[in-house]
Length: 209
Image (cartoon, rainbow, N blue to C red; front, side, top):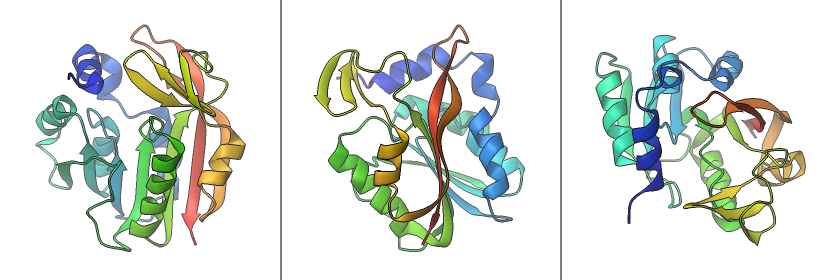
C-alpha cells in the first residue's frame, strides 16, 4: 500500500514553503537550551530540523516516510549537526531514557488513536532529560476538517487515506499530564493546502517533571 505521506512529500517537494522554517519552529526555539540535543518527530522534508541546526542545536531528524527522508537527506547534507533516521513512533522509541533536551513535533502526533497518542506522550517524557522541553503543534477541534469523515473515537476520524486526531486544550492537558504546561492553546497556524490557506492549530509546550 502506498504511504499517503510519500504522496504528500511528492506534492510539496517543490513548494517554497517547505524550504523555510515553520512559524511554530520560530515561536518555540526560544525555549530550547543552548546547543540542545533535539529529537524531531515527523520531520517531513526537514525544514525545521535545518533551522534548528543553523542555530547550533544537534538534531536527530526522524520520519516514517521514505520519500520525506530522501528529500531531507538531500537538503541537509551540508549540515554536520543533523542525523536523519527512519522512525515509526507508533512503536516504543529506540532511545535510552533521559537522552534529549528537546522533543519537537510539528503536525506529526495527530494521526493516532488515544492508546498510541498516550504512548507517544509517555515515550517523549521517558527520553527527555529532567526539565526537558516537549513542543507539539497539532490539528485542533476548530479545524475545518473536524467532524468530517468516519468517526473512529472522540476527536479521531478517518478522512480519506489518513486518520486524523483533532485536539482541544482539554485533551492536550490530559495527554500531557506528565508535563508542567507552559503553553496550551488553539492559537497556532498551519498551512492547509498548497494554495497557502491558513487554519488554526493546537500548540503544546511542556516541561518534563
